[in-house]
Length: 483
Image (cartoon, rainbow, N blue to C red; front, side, top):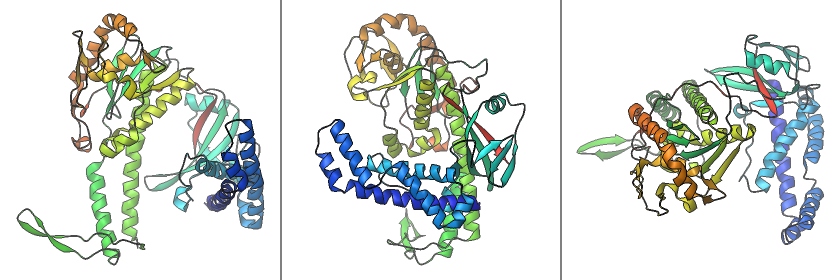
């Protein structure tokens, strides 16, 4: 823990220095003059000169890290030079996101939110040596399953560097060594990725896909345990504890009407700065709530990864509309929290591209696939209308039909003639997918109530279990629990 606290304090100091130098560069005369130049090499060189004048570069922050760590001798004793450089790189990249407009601000780390440190190579600093995590004089034995094929494959690969991670599991701190290896991940013989085009239609609670032969309308995070009742009960207990230990930040209780009855309502939190006193009971309840949230998120990720693997078995060239998951969060907050379609989309993109495929998005407004008929005409539908009745006489589930048309979109252009020619041969398995969805669907739980979902999307369906597909990539990682 002392090494992590030293790393955290050094990281915060480096992040502050990075932001100071970034602001100096951004407000300098050289930077303002560079902004007025036309796009090209001259403009880029002018920006580089402004950054160099403010000593704002990854190398400069790494040099400052050495000076800062040596000034506080205890930090230099706890954190080696290689780890200091990786912390400097991490702080510099965080400040760069603000400079380029990819983030609005940086976040300084409190003790409970600094959970990882890593080295640069496996030769110095944090490293893996013969089944042990070695960091200076610290040597920790790892708990490893020798019969696990994926772990054995990772250990046989050359270790590039090691990342040390701490996690809170069931209220207890656990330590893991994540080994970043050279090569590709282990792939079981029964796992495969097929080359082919897959049209995708993403919704709040499910995803429709259409490949060369199969199709499906599958739910996100099927049967995910929301723990809604347990979490609500804990939140009520936490609120009572907080009000009992902090009477000043709250307005006084008042009488209000609930129907024909007069009831006492709790006062709201006062505006302005306030200090919260948290009792031991409150902290225990908060830890219990965090564990339930962690279990829910872990299960959701696991189920969505299986869904990604099911789709990749049918094709690695994904074509889908551009959807705003953030916009969905404002309207269907609980459903997004339970189903996590944004994570599914990012994971599918990562695995498709690492498997020599592609992930192509196109404009929802321009294509309007849910409104398009095979005749070329368009007709608006309400969100509650889940069946597409085409002008050519075709009747199909709205999401499956949109996924079918997505297969024929290339560079924001829909090849409608190809879709018309291919539909007769694909209609049978589209109807079969629709029938499976209607047969298996069932009302979902409280967390996915009508307040959280659009009409007729409030259903879950059973999908066949599938093994994990390890996507092909340049590097592989293996997690090791450290004792």
